[in-house]
Length: 362
Ligand SMILES: NC(=O)c1ccc[n+]([C@@H]2O[C@H](COP(=O)([O-])OP(=O)(O)OC[C@H]3O[C@@H](n4cnc5c(N)ncnc54)[C@H](O)[C@@H]3O)[C@@H](O)[C@H]2O)c1
Ligand SMILES: CC(C)[C@H](C(=O)O)[C@@H](O)C(=O)O
Ligand SMILES: [Mg+2]
Image (tube, rainbow, N blue to C red; front, side, top):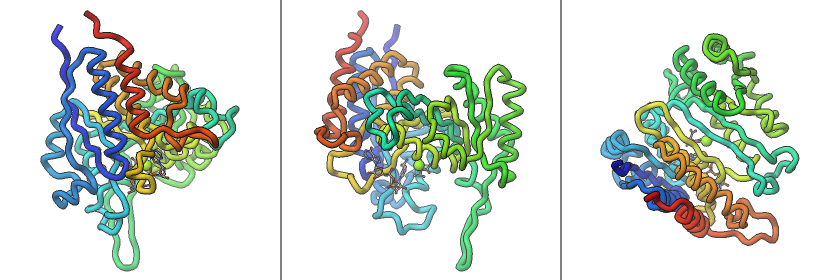
């Protein structure tokens, strides 16, 4: 059989983006070696780094490279240096354009609390231990993209808009994942106030009734969902929601494993998937070797899984568990008295673990 060969575009971005992406690439290269596939990577600037180099947060050649890749691995974009730019010129606008151009409408954000992390959370161990939920966030619609939008001297406005088809397709993604997991979907909206949410609820219910009647569906208002997520996270299996609510709920859910540095994501829907940690560029810790690379490394595991390299993805996840179990972890996960490891040390540990796993079958 021919050796599979994947071409990955790497977009490190800004702040801690390059630091965590470096470790994710290190682990991907180890996985390729151990599991017998070829990997080529091509690195481009995006976000603030691209603004500084070209004036555009998503230069056309970078977008074209992404569209031609097998997958895109991104670090994070943004930072104080670019905070005064107009919205459309900001680093974040480049990321949003990329998601849209890749048609990456389904953003999968798994949240797990392995035993070794149950004490890293600010919440009680009895509440969070064993949490295993998946946030399915709609990523290319809603208020992030709705028109009209704008501002004048006196006011500013945005539009939250969803079509039936946009809701139905994200609902299907959520139900398909629920089928492979524990069979339960919680749909989150604000249907007591917003027309968009009333349509959302109607369409999710219809997709459930017509296509997935064997699964369980519950509806939550977003304010209650936020409270339930930290009060009793284990009640959730798959959580499906719109772009803005999903953004907010996923950062909130990061309190469960104890750090934003633990949450990976995969944005899929088009031909090319985009894999990025949930966190941002963390300017407060950038350049200090302190950033937790696990969200980026776990995003790389999702990338491997999406490319069909399930065994390699499993080895990476086991490497993450091994690092946590051995206490090889960055400061964000350490309790008083524990010695933090650097970003690089965590990446090196996991890469070494992956290399030892499965020798290439001969
Ligand atoms: N996908 C992305 O590129 C993305 C996501 C979120 C925010 N941003 C951008 O990042 C910039 C900073 O935003 P912010 O400060 O609100 O959010 P942030 O996610 O960058 O940081 C929030 C807090 O979490 C900590 N943190 C985040 N990632 C961490 C990691 N891997 N290890 C350890 N600690 C970590 C930070 O130190 C900070 O205290 C902004 O410009 C924002 O727009 C980008
Ligand atoms: C940087 C920003 C545009 C982005 C979002 O809001 O989608 C980020 O917060 C995220 O969660 O990926
Ligand atoms: Mg966010």
